[in-house]
Image (cartoon, rainbow, N blue to C red; front, side, top):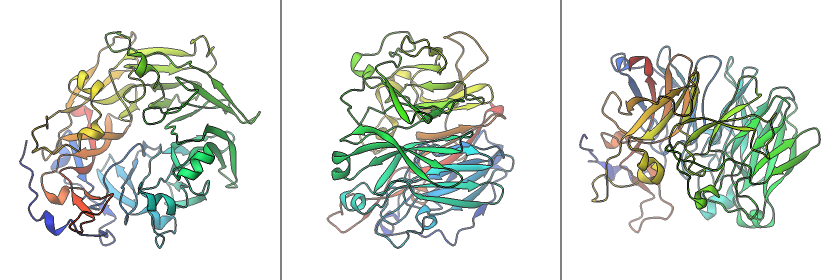
Length: 476
């Protein structure tokens, strides 16, 4: 591994805010670097305070990849970007979503696009999420926005704050028939989640009218990362359990029916987990079962899903078919053993792509978001390579071939430490965003400190940086 250079870092750690306004909105690619199988762009050369990205990436019908860049900073919000895989041109559409919300003069940031990006009728839809998780930031936060972006014109539509003082954590889905958006509304202020809880909310895409479809979690925090809106306009979802405990949910499936305006709960119906060698996962892990990634079929009659890393530990790809019996388990069909995966999963053409540690045992026991924080110069650091892998969705059999596309190392030798956003197109391009090992302080993240350092510093320069990358699997 190249030695990481952090000379002159001290000059950066006291910077309060990095402005990107003078940067070019569109950056032309390095034509020589384009010849590499993996081509990356340093996001921290654009904005030092971007420090991660979770979900918030999609390949749209215009062939471009749209993605967010997020932060926990007190003084900078999320970015919104476009990447054209035909020209390798990167365009920063919005530097700071706080400005797009008209909230730049208020004491908080719209710090993340921590939701899927969904498409309908030429528009993309996504949610904002708070950046600063400390007390002052949470109490000042007015609530998450839902945005539409029209690809043909570059026009934004701000649907405004969905539920005052509530964030969205983090699911969004679109019903193209009823022209409705659905989001998972979550309070982070203690008095709100203790007195109330989490709600399923809908937004009329035409009028902007918002509706409370019902409380899902009572008296506590919660999370739901993915919705599946089927062809009959039912909204299916699960609750994430790694960080939250629900008294009456140990594998439940939820369904909102807009005609009856009612949420049905199917108790303990999600499949019990198995490892790739068909060994059952532990009962403790089974209690954490939840959808940690899904992708609807084009006709919305079915969807793919996984319950992998932080979702129960199951190592299979599944199909959910709501037309079949749910209680008996007939609605859940295992497709293939793939090993442990999480947000870093995507369908592209007739393949399922996913990122994993080189060794599956590491994928089962180590969460990359924690691993990326370990100082590479410390004794406890162990270098672990992240690989891109895939299976054919046309093949049959649970133990079909898993193709290894190799470790994620880009044109300049940066190695991936964490991938939490991923998308793929039908032409063999896979798009990822995550934390990579930088070659110099210029590529490193400047992270806001939750508590001010005794020497007065408000930031620290990390030994990781944020990169967007495209992998051309045709060059395997």
